[in-house]
Length: 225
Image (cartoon, rainbow, N blue to C red; front, side, top):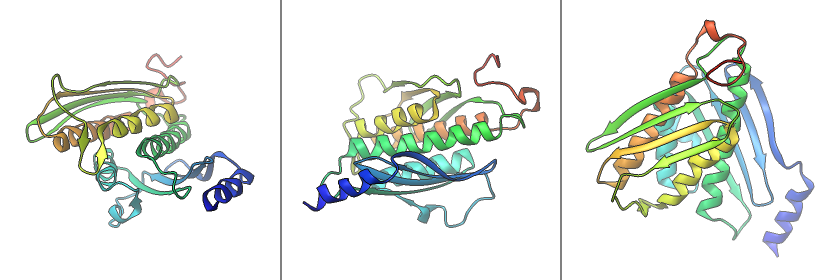
């Protein structure tokens, strides 16, 4: 009964993605569904010493990956998550958080469009034996292409299903309307393989948001038309 009452209460609220703060260097938003409420912020301000404390999801490993993403992208990321009691699933947690952060990145891209940024980027990063490559492009085309390492078993990683982390990447692409390629080139330890993905993703995002006056005012996409 409590879960149904909570769903009804949220049904009366405004559902969907709602920006709270919209600035060229800072976007904060809330994304509500009948299942979850995600509040998140991404900003390009100087590094927040309390960055780690601001990332609060139900999964310790996802927190670690978001911190890794923030560090490599040179962005401050804060996330909090709330769900209907008794309804939580890892799939929904990861997809909704990914979609919220993707929509915020899209807002940041649009806010910096006139100033001029690359709009696309790539990164190759590793940790120990693992190596990954990521390419992102703000094309207004939501597509994810994920390639795990051949023959590797990636069913679980720490306190998560590996498929739920893939759902985060898919949600990020959906929310950001971006094309994302993520390829694990090699590895053996699931923790290292996934961390290499998020390291490479952060590098690609940092490259995509790097200033590029030549592209000032260009529309999304590599062609700039």
